[in-house]
Length: 187
Image 1 (cartoon, rainbow, N blue to C red):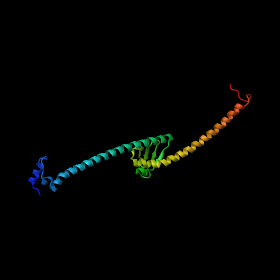
Image 2: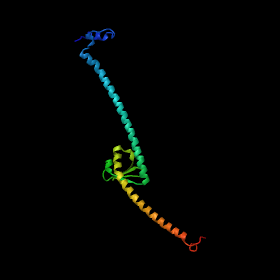
Image 3: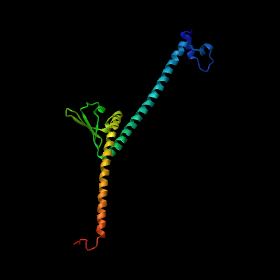
Image 4: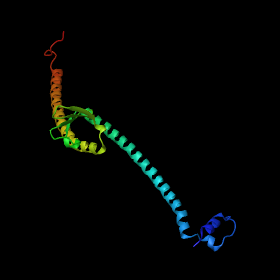
């Protein structure tokens, strides 16, 4: 084992001067004290680098989340406003009692009515992605059913209008084929 003086002398030796075997091999205690802080520092710097990279990825994901929610909101709003449909949303999605009523308007505002008479309005995009996903999953079948009913109604009305137009066109053609003496004179 080296004494404290020999350790001091080995540290003060000029690095360019040849050293003895004893000076080349530091004691185990000296090795632990000189390498541990370096290892700890290197490990801490690596962890800080990883922390910074992971934080940047979280920031980017949060930014993407906001953009995706905005895009979903805008696309869904175009559809619901065009159709003019309001839908009910199940209260359990918002952790509300089952006697609460939530209506999603065509502009995607959510009207929340509680039994005690309290009413509040929230924006679709104000909620976390998990809640938005549940809302979309819940209202999509309702919207499809409303579209199906609207489509059937419009098809029926268009069919009626086509038939009426065809009949009126037939009458118009008859008028053109009538002899001039039977056609009423315009004054």
